[in-house]
Image (cartoon, rainbow, N blue to C red; front, side):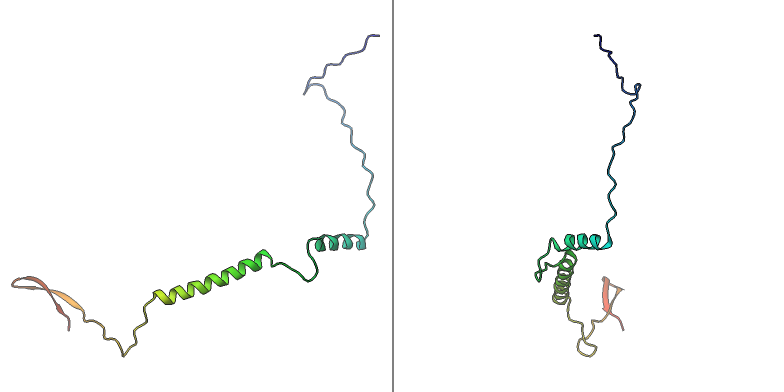
Length: 107
């Protein structure tokens, strides 16, 4: 009763590849596919109560930030001077006098 011993060396001894036999699935009808899709969609939501999506939350946050930015711009920018109300300071230019350099108002 001598049993035959096989030595299997990886890469040298090749075993025949046995394909798994899978029973072919019957093609689903359109109605069955639609029913499964509806079940998947409705499984996470309850009727009437819908949480805002990520996109909607980001849009709300963006609107809030824009409002804050507008308020900050208003509070940090000085009022624009009206054309008739505020006199512009006169321009000064450097001049050389007997005592040294000085500035005077330009014409």
